[in-house]
Length: 314
Image 1 (cartoon, helix red, strand yellow):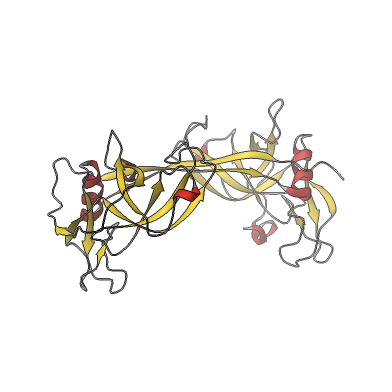
Image 2 (cartoon, one colour):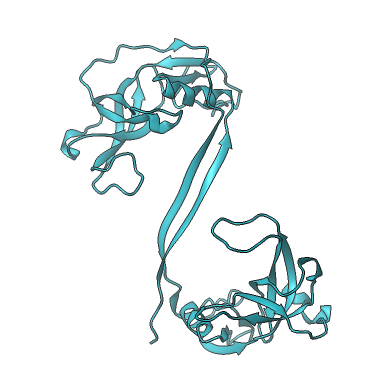
């Protein structure tokens, strides 16, 4: 059996959002070492605050200040912190109901070990030395011996220089294993060939192969070499430059039905002005030295394919 490939992959992007009056007051309050909740029509205080009542869907605007001390309602121990988590040493994830609040806030607890954590324990906020108006302004919670006595008090939510937007980095690290069928596909690409697999039932050739026919649900094993030329079935013009992608905009990204394939794959179109790309354009792959996949596809110079020849692959 051929070697199955695997590779580490990272999906990462900055998520930017604007803040309404409630979230703006909450995050600005954290910067000022003040924790705000919002009061519902039935008198409950929600921390963190939301803009609409989760039960009645009524708009909520009545802000109220709660204490920086609270009670752990549930917890889970994290023995091996990952990159960018709040603490570099083992800690507990905790839900803390702050004094004066009726709901719990998710954060971390700095504790020497799981034996030092229990439901019902009293904790307090440890503020970050430098605060910017984010949930990370709460560095963590820490054990604190006290009784729950504080109650919530009304707050205007007004601060100087309020936080109006946040940028949250989202990142997913994982190892991708393509499996037998796609490993064979990738290995063939490294030899400047494109192979698919034929379904033994409907006889369609799928590129890239999945190891099973998505229509019939049966395993596929018969390899079929397709292309190298193909037909543009549909396309889009990209006008926004992607980070870390050295391609000048605008450029065209297309669905390309390779000759002999019953499924269109994705590819960039080059060697032609972007506004001359069209459905039915005949194209061929362009390889760069040492590459494991085509850099782009360019026109072959052949007449355009007839629409009936690729309409089932749109």
